[in-house]
Structures are given as structure tokens and as C-alpha cells.
Length: 367
Ligand code: UDP
Image (cartoon, rainbow, N blue to C red; front, side, top):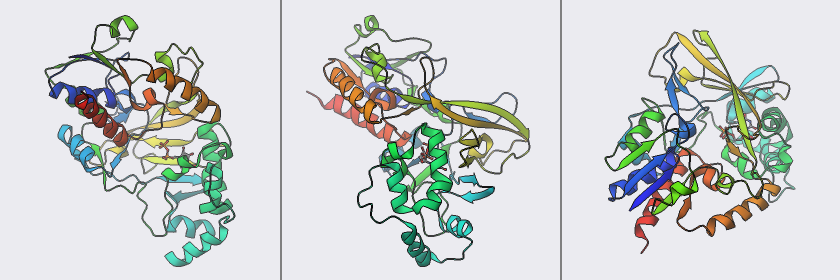
């Protein structure tokens, strides 16, 4: 069959590869000048540093099949994400761990003592936390919530944490030991030559044809037996019911001679610092050494028309609109909506790959 992948990010590349290997003829189109979607990495011309052009992407997973899959297409080198946060004039360790708790409260608690201490701060009247704020108050109490989560989240999402779902905070663990690994998955690493090189290898198959700076339109779709669409769901339907809300990011790039901040990611918890975090990209490739350094100050705001969509907002209003677009999508024959933008979900890379493998499998298995 002749199949079209709209989007050369992880979803389009993985689905395309799986279906090419199964004997189908694949065309991949992308409106951008590069493959890789928002995972795109590029060496900085001035410093030689591998830059995560659309913000930090750290590969972590518990899914052995996904880990094997990415290791087929790239050499993954050890990388542990150890995030710090600057708040109220001090630098703390994230995710909240025993070091954070002891430093914040000026104590020397052992694990069991810290657990009991934090439990005493927590609001136990919240039985089933629904919002981000309730989740935080239930599990860490008001002090840590206000120092580390409230301001950051208001900047990141542009609304009160009381309006956000608890699931966003559930991404972050609280630890009663000194483990400062940001993620708790079994597998974690960084592709040696960046994500774009990995995705180029996924797309490197004789039955796959890639066309960049090529936009999707319905005429084109008609020439294929099936379309896998990883662009924005509402965009496919010409935004006819309205626009699904996204947060977009502005990156303020600056360079530095030497080591600017000593870590890859420094968050800023205070509300009056306008950016959410600073990323220093050379620390994402700790096996390389560079004198020069490239940093991004990261600012979050509501995405307008023409801005790059990053984080789907998914508040009550968006959920209603999403359900309407999902109904339109379900009634669209010959098109599968895939990936972060195609399904309007906050997806990590490993989940995106897992779903892409499953979509390809499902397509091959249908009668
Ligand atoms: N978060 C926070 N303070 C921090 C880091 C994260 O309040 O210092 C909240 C924030 O709302 C964020 C969410 O936790 O959107 C998930 O954080 P994560 O680091 O997973 O975000 P990502 O790297 O995907 O932007």
C-alpha cells in the first residue's frame, strides 16, 4: 500500500519505519526544514555544542521494547537528569528528596523521620486529590508547594495550580532518600549524536521517501491508501470548531565561556523571575567537552496562531472541544491521528514510540 506520514517527528518516523519493513511504500512529509519534530537537535555553529533546539529532551523509559528499539538506531550514552531549582535565594535539589527537605527546613532528618515530618505537613483531609494544588498539599504540604511548585507552575501553565489536573504533578516523585535522579525509570540515556541523527536512521529505509518543507492538504491525502497524521488535531479540520489551547515556549539563547551553571537544568521557582528554567546544553552530552557554552532561558506563554505548540493545556474548556474534534477524527475514514499533536496529549518520547509501535502493529493486524 502507499501510505502517507504527516510529520517527520518520532511518531511519523517510527510508524513509517515499521510499515516500510512490512513491505509498504512510505512517504513522509514535514512542513519544517528538518526532521525530528520538537526532538530536533543540532550542533551549534559557534561552540560545537549539541543543542536541543526545542528545549530539553531526556530519554527515559521502563519499556524494554522501546529501549531496544531506540538502541537499534542510536548509541545511547549514560545521562542522569539531576535538576536543581533556585528558590528564595538558595539552590535546592529536585525532585524533592531528603536533601531538599533537610536543607529547606534546616534539619538533619533520617528517611523515616522525614516521612513522618512531611506527613505532618500534608493536608490529610484531601482524600482523593483532583487538582495539581490538592495533590501537592496532600503529599508535600504548603511550604514546599509554595517554594517549588506554585510559582513555577503559574509561570509554566499561565493559571492557578488549583485549575490544573493532579496528573501533571504526578510526573514528579517525592523521595525520602538522597536519590536526586529526576526520573525513576530503569533506562535513561542520551543519543550520542542527538535525536535528529537517530530519527534520520529510523527514516533511512529504501521504502521511505522524506519531503521537507512540504505541507499537508486534502488533495495530497487522496493519493494514498492511508494517512497517519501527527500534526495538530484541530489543524486537520481547519480549526473549524475553534482552537485547542497550547502553551508555547520562547527561548532566549545566550553563550558563555566555560561552565555557566554547572548543571543541565536549573529551574526557577520564584514567581518574580520571569523565566521557568535555564538549560545549559553541553551538560546534556557529558561525554563531550566544549569551552564555549550555549544556554536557553525558557519562557512559557499561551500559544497564538503561528506559534509552535508545545504543551496541550487540557483544562475543562479544552476537554469539551477535544471531545468534539475526537468525534470528527473518529468519523474520518483513512486517517489515523497519532502522537502528541494528533491526539492532543502531554506525551513523553518513550510513550510516543510505544504508541507508534502499537499503531503500526494494529494497522498491520487489521483484516
Ligand atoms: N514543576 C514545578 N516546579 C519545578 C518543576 C516542575 O512546579 O521545579 C511542575 C510544573 O507544573 C511542570 C510539572 O511539574 O509542568 C512537570 O514537570 P516536568 O519537569 O516533568 O516538566 P517538563 O520538563 O515536561 O516541562
